[in-house]
Amino acid sequence: MEIYIESLLNGLLMGSIYGLTAVGLTVIFGVLKVINFAHGSILMVGMFVAYWCVTLTGMNPYLAIPIVVPLMFYFGYFMQQIVIEPVFKAEKDVREPITVIIVTTGVWYILDNLALMFFGAEYRVAHTSVTGKLFELPGGIYLLQPKVYGFVITFACALFLFWFLKNTVMGKAIRATSLDRDAASLMGVNQYRIYRTAFGIGTAACGLAGCVLIPFYYVYPSVGLVFDIRAFIIVVLGGLGSIPGAIIGGIIIGVIEEVGAMFMPSTWTELVIYGLFLLLLFVKPAGLFGSKQDF
Image (cartoon, rainbow, N blue to C red; front, side, top):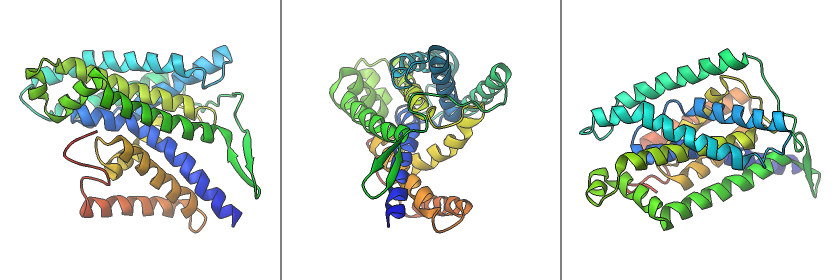
């Protein structure tokens, strides 16, 4: 019985971290109304920034968060301003410019190949103060410490974003722009500044996820692809633009992976996940928490 409880708890913990990797994607979609195909590569950049920050200084990976998250925020802010914003301005009459998808796909390939050129293809492991350490629960249940810390950080991040979007002037401007950018502009909101801020928040979330992942996950140039596919499934499952949906969707995927692997080969759990994904698209295309009003 303990082994089933342990698998369930591990699924909850890993699923919450999957949810954290998807938060940035759902924030960007909720405001800009475009799919960011470079999301996985941005997560890879966040992991490399966290990895080098921890490896070169020897600091605790969680103490690197105040350094990595602001760096990633400005990385996303200026990427939006320099690379994506010109497309929005060129197609300002289009609500969801498809060209942005092509641009973000190009960013995806550029970032992956730059990482390959500078860091090589080898898998890197960050040896941190929490790597490999376990919490022992009654009944002989063991949980990896970095995953427990990741679970706590994920929910703290989700609660902070929820508070930020509901209670701050910038958060209200972001929500207004996500609902109707033209009406928000008429009220004096600079929609392009909001887009840059939203993209920065989404990128900063990838930096946070990078700090959470490096104590127990390999870092390599194509690592973003592993989380990218899951993030897209999670965001659709939870509802495009919904932060609670991203967290719950991630937990569902994590539990299926961990518990399902006890009864079937891991490749079959992928089949279950994709089957659930397709079933939800037929039954509830907006996702579990999707609605007309994002956030």
